[in-house]
Length: 481
Image 1: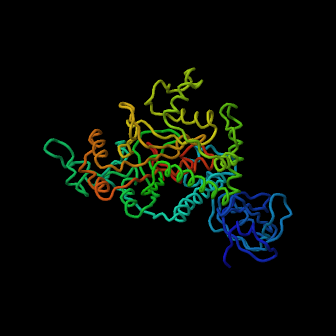
Image 2: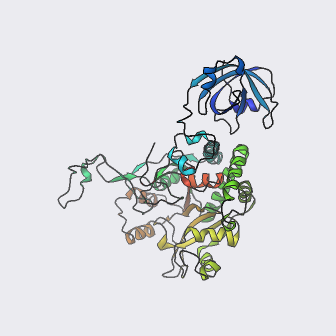
Image 3: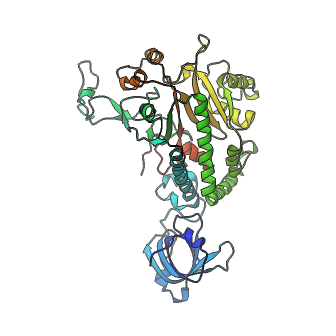
């Protein structure tokens, strides 16, 4: 008999028929009631065992974490909190779980403990919910762009270029660490390496994505990216997933419209598809916040916050206006910020971004027209800007609790301006000859943005540490599992 998912059993419209369910035991009480979960839903189904006619040896093997198969009659439940239950006629233990050693006991565990057991933490309610929401959001990303006629492009994971100019990249090499071939001046001889040149794991698929946008019109990438940044904050991972659309003929305003529409679509998709998981995560967040001082608690519950983003237009503010607001703000004047804003040109920190969103505007904010010297070389230089105060057509979207969630720009489409910017930053034209070709042959205005997928999942689930929204986090000194 084929087994039925717990989710489908709980949504059944008929009873008194024989069913089979397979899953893992969450709890077993009174030698009679199994709470069974198979990962299809946050809810368990109660399975009532005829303990008087079940061997003691079998009953002893029904422990938290054990995999079991139950066959029986689906009936309306007499107990509170569940609609249906299974009156078990046949029980089979598929896989034992030593109750003394199984780490995921039915009690509250710290998030740090669960990270140390990332291979088993998904068997808890919280992480089951997070990973189902993550899955639905991932599908929503593809659904949005496919509905809009975008072409999905797989950009390289191994690359010879540093799109961000950050220099914090993981090297990819097949050279031996002992007896590494050297040039005459003692440097590593990459000509003898597998690719014949220095290569790294990618930090972004943007540059390659631009080349495809200039032929296919509108494309998006959605893949893994890597940063060798030695950062142990709750916002950073060494391996994470990026969503990067690039659109020919879009200017900065079009880019802001696209990003806002996209974010609202995927959040609404999650709200529609994951109501029970999000309700559970909201309750979890409320419990967690009870232990925090009042000043640190969220002003809105999780579902209220998600609906707030759907119902409010994002406020569009220039960098210059934002600097004036921050400079005159109370926390800046009273030196409550860790980074005091004194002058135009300062790089905004997360505390500044969150102040603008959470305290000043009280809605999502899109900042645009940033100083050129704090942004990447490929961003379009604004015309008619003051010498020494040059700005670029960049935009960042700031969210409550997160700070920056999206970074993007109108790209510099003018060949001569791009070459000058590359020269000023010491970027080798020969390394990016192929990128410059898109400006040599049929160049046009185009724009795009990057959204770190884990930051989106963080926002939607209400979690506070990015390590808790990716299956197996990769961080400094940690590549376990």
